[in-house]
Length: 291
Image (tube, rainbow, N blue to C red):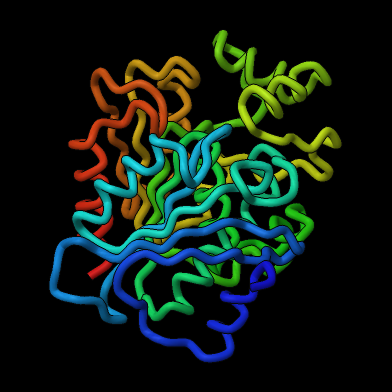
């Protein structure tokens, strides 16, 4: 099947989600093929349009088949259906990583597919870079989004399929942060030719060398636009990449009536460090807010 063929066929004749696992290659709005996997819930009771689905957005250098993401999917499918995918430049997806910018189009394609499969309720859960992506996707999807912010993003269509609840785990609040040694290494990998070579062959992540133009909306500017969609911000007090001023900045900018902040003792960073107990609580929170 040609890239995006399964998704295109599904768009022409929407049907309820099928049981079991299935794969698809989705085409983003800008024509990048994205590898995607759908897994039905193992909770029993069958599937229907009333079954929520969690769309998982991984962190930088992650991918659909990486063990950490497979573990996240395994925990979430204990409760509901799950869609995982590889961002552009990661895994078997096409294109090059823009490190959180045009990745919003990858997430939008996965959310649209979830609705095409018949799911009326869609939850987005993002980790680290994926956390910043789910925040911006939700902001772009909000009906009350100011026109000037849409123009600043320099694109349309990324906001056409919003989520019913949003969870950002280990997400940055602002761009260009270099305050920790791990983040200085990340910036070296992104901005230097040698670093991009190491990323490509050592981390299997292909990075776009052109940089951002224009600069995407920062996460801290995105969170006020998400309300009234329920938002959960999760961060560990042992995060080696982003210290606690990042989640606190996000929470300070968010609508408190629709947003919660969990500071998790002993938790490190993103999907690689998230314990099963925390992932289960995240899923429980999201499902409770998408009745």
